[in-house]
Figure 1 (tube, rainbow, N blue to C red):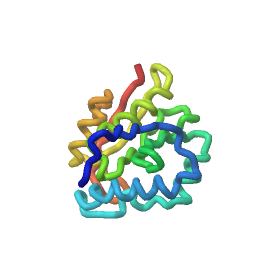
Figure 2: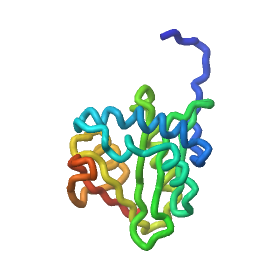
Figure 3: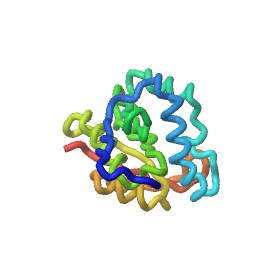
Length: 166
């Protein structure tokens, strides 16, 4: 790797994720969740079987909002809130950061943006693999607490977590 001594760091810009970004977002999502698939011995986990058409349809759903983290023109990560129009809790889903950019705070920026859109007292829930220590720690730092465990559609043991917006 070559560095340029006087180069300014490129800022991460978080903005809304639209259906026109579905292909890019899916590429990042697949790359990010491949390690989860390997960890659990299956590539049938929901983020790895979603299609670009599924993702685009989700983003035009009035009950879904997505956020993207951009470094220049590169999509570095994304996250979605689902069920915003329902009576139950909001679902935080598909939080993904490109593997080569993980550990740089991009996931935290995305979570902050998503949470900023929630009114005080709004309950949000998520699931993550029970062996995904980094994810469990990240979500814990954002106030999520474990509320149960179960097997997902791929047979992976997952942890259900809950947070109430301050």
